[in-house]
Image (tube, one colour):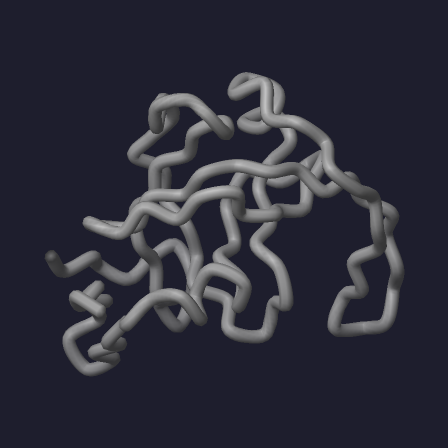
Length: 127
């Protein structure tokens, strides 16, 4: 299924819809727009979504921006659905003020994605 790039950015950014669920629960939140961020080590989810899911905190750590700034974050465990792919017990970092999900390499490396830049679509392929 093709997912259109997010045109709120210039140039448009690769994006896919995801669903989220707490461990041992259904995918109860979604579809939600998420940005594909191959430069991010870990997936980042707005804290409001994690609270709504009742997702458990499993660790804490730091995120570093591209400019070197560090921010302390909590790490939660959730299930992530991308297309037909269900990923379980995925560690995600919380973001206090954000409103977008950034799919980092801890999720992206489990998927077979095709970025079609000229047509501004992302295709999630079968593994």
